[in-house]
Amino acid sequence: MANRPWAFLQHRVVSAQVEAARRQAQTASERATLSGGLGTKLTGDLVRLDRMSAVWPNTVVVVFQGDARPELRYPGEVVVPRILPGRDPTFVLPVATGLVTVDVEISNAVTFDGQRIEQVVIRVAMHLSPTDRYRAVAALAAEYRTELADALLRQVRLEVSAEVEAAVRLNRLSDLRRRGLQEVLADRWLPTTFASGALLRDSFEVRSVTWPDPTAQAAGPGLHLSVDDRLHQVWKRVVGSEVRGIAGAQVGGSSTVIVVPLTPPSQYETERVREEYAKHFADQRVAMLMILAESYEDLVREWFRRVDSSPARLLSVEPSGDHQALLIRVSQSARSQDGHTSDAGGPVGTDSARAALTHLLRDLRIEFIGVT
Image 1 (tube, rainbow, N blue to C red):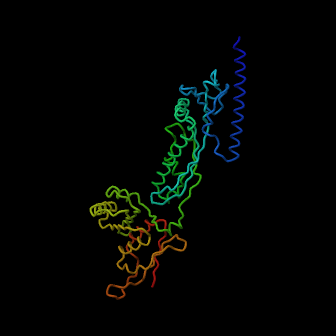
Image 2 (cartoon, rainbow, N blue to C red):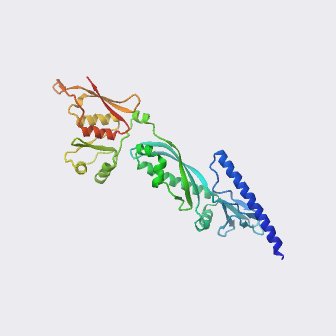
Image 3 (cartoon, one colour):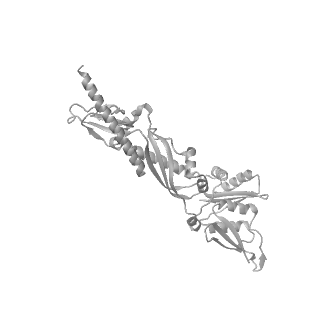
């Protein structure tokens, strides 16, 4: 009989605390929604417990008592401090089990074709994994204590950044823009768990992407070239070095491959890769143009020299006024070595040579302009 009043009082106190916590949590959630904030924090403050308290809804509490192993308390359960809290204090760390949201910013991710995406912001919604009833949380809290949230969210940012950078690195800029980064990441890239499974991803959203400026790309000194996957695989298998760009075409019975390597391969590697491209196109007469260049003008001038019988008739290479095209001005006649004018009209190079150049400069329209 003596225990009944105490049990009744404890029940009343805990019930009142749980209901007050529920109302407070709901109010906080509404404020976060109205303000557009990121909502619930992953952990609260580590506080010293001086009186009996109940665990809030959508929360577990890690209880630290001296040197003992941290223990967990679940929603509705009561945490009771020790008899002499001044000498032997009890500390508690509340950890949210509901939805937690974090923004991850990735800077200067580089695409497969060498183009730089200045900034990507990914918003990730996640929650603690309930596996083993959150026992892993107690182990992590014992290690990090007040730094638990920072440690877990830092790991989330590292893992998200690594996967986003990998997804960008293995896709061309044009493909990323066509499909959208959200769809690309949803395929298989973004992790479904973080921090060795401590956190589970609920959803994610690509909040913003700062794409490269096509005007700056066309006018700038750098090269932004396409890389054909199949031709690139052949190159890497035989040569092993990286390329700025690689493209090919087979048109009208002729085949051409253009490679812009970072460093020139050996003569042996050059012959080996030419043989592989001949197999690829089933054309033993495939033309392989290996061009070292740092600018569009250098690239086109060397390409012109290699494909046209009268390279002296190339007058200029420059971007159009809107920087969406590359204008190649070609004289309709050219001087021969003996100083006489020769007839050099007609198209530049073969159909496959022009098509391969078009594929290589896929972000720019190529226009040949005849000048008399």
